[in-house]
Length: 149
Image (tube, rainbow, N blue to C red; front, side):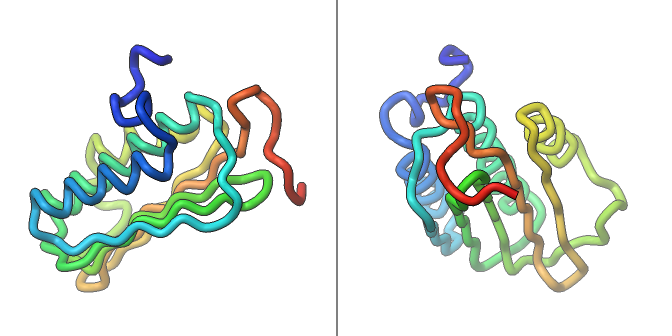
């Protein structure tokens, strides 16, 4: 897994890697982007961190290619036994379920592979939101502290 990990994750934690990724993306594409981290940060298993990082990358790539957005928000939330990732834009949006491409399919497969769920919400003229919900399995293999359902 380490060989497949993005270089940013090898040098820092997930929140900082997402900030760096988003800042570089924003500068490169000239689109305002903001990152917010909520909750108590837990070091997660490498598989989960890589998956969340890659979903953020793919979501930002989709925004740059398709959205014509002026703003993007990335939120990473540590919520007890789950970690939530939201990438949302104010772009042109699309009719969900129609013409979903390889990027969205690969994000779904990646998140499903770590026991999570991904939801895409969009409508023409309303922007797009990609939301991932994954178990907070820590780097040591246990579940993060918090409320369990």
